[in-house]
Amino acid sequence: MSYNENTRIGVLLRNDAARDLLTRRIPALLTAPPHMASLLKSLTLAMYYRFHQEELSSTDWLAETLAELAQLPVVPQSTQEEQPPVAPSAFYESESVPIGSAAVQSPEQAERWGVFQIELRGPSHGNPFTDVVVEAEFRAGDKTFRVAGFYDGDGIYLIRCMPDVLGNWAFRTSSNARSLDGIEGAFRCVEPSPGNHGPLRVHNTFHFAYEDGTSYIPVGTTSYAWTHQGDELEKQTLDSLKASPFNKMRMCVFPKSYLFNFNEPVYNPFEGSLTEGWDYSRFNPAFFRHLEERIAELGELGIEADLILFHPYDRWGYSEMAPSVDDRYLRYIVPRLSAYRNVWWSLANEYDLMWSKETDDWERFASIVTGNDPVGHLISNHNCFSFYDYSKPWITHCSIQRIDVYKTSEATNEWRDKWQKPIVIDECAYEGDIDQGWGNITGEEMTRRFWKAPFAAAMSDTGRRT
Image (cartoon, rainbow, N blue to C red; front, side, top):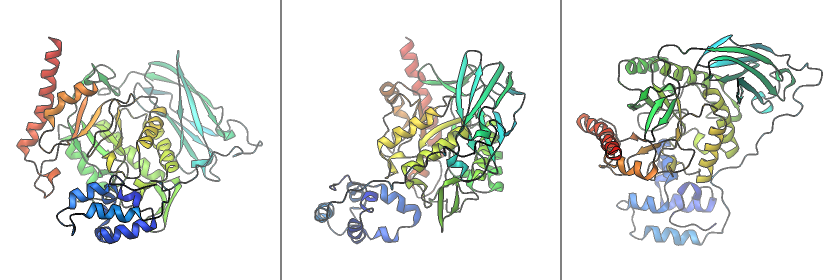
């Protein structure tokens, strides 16, 4: 492949000769702290030059760098390391194991839009995360859908669904593991408890409403890495939210490494360690149980969990996993969480800073998420410098970060007219006094931006009605 000014630094670093050249021309690559190294990789050569012109010794730095790169041997480079996918075992259990012999436990009833869970106690030999596939077909009258299950460790397999029709339901499992195959059961879906309005849906093109028709106006906050801080601080966060007006929170699945986020997480998503490496074929169920516990606690407070599936602020390697690992992760987490009514899917925080992902990757991720989510939760992809193509049919709403330092909420009508979808300004800057531009607006300016966006939208709606 040939290199040009739009080649990302991360791609260049995969080539040994280009790496040697870049570390000479960009000494910061050798000294950058971990939280900045991943961001440097996301920059193109042209962007790096634009951001660092004053400190670079040559005014012709970009041209000189490209000229030197042009002298290097052409070596095809992928943005991601390949790792062969692992297929489920066709002979995971011998024919001596009776069909449907696993112990099963499930409740006799579940509330509408609640979490119904089937627990199967089955085999644990080999690697059940990759060797075993289990799912269930759920039926209620004319309604039928299939839900993937997942391995939760210690020989336990779980299958979850969110029943949305009152009355009698039935299910039947299927699996390549004989003991988990062909298990049948039934339950009754009853009226939802107070405060349970169901999952959110797009309403009247530009707005949101719960499944039962109750109107919803998002008033959001962000706490990216709160589930990685330990119980004391996480409980403090919940107490603060309980006393706040917020009804949505953006939060990451993976831990974050950036300013103000230097701690090691309590739980890791995979078996292994940062020093010895991760076994990407084996998830750590404790990590995901902790995450879903926090999501459920947000739900009890009436707060939507806008869940960020990928992000670039990383020193553990989760932002640069092989495509097969990315896919396996999504096929694991979506069935675990899709039965929770207060989940939104955000494919990424600042997708365009993730240097190892291309448009085809994001589209593949969207297909996996929507294909494993029978509830049809809200889903989007969040930007840094460049908006994603929000006209894509799978995108339910536009998750937007400002691309103009000053003009943000003022552009609400423009964006609505362009994409004909709800606009959620998920990052209009943060109130504070730090030395970063994204975190030093005043409380008065934050209030102005909060008011400006819905006011502009209301004016726009009025104009359309007349």
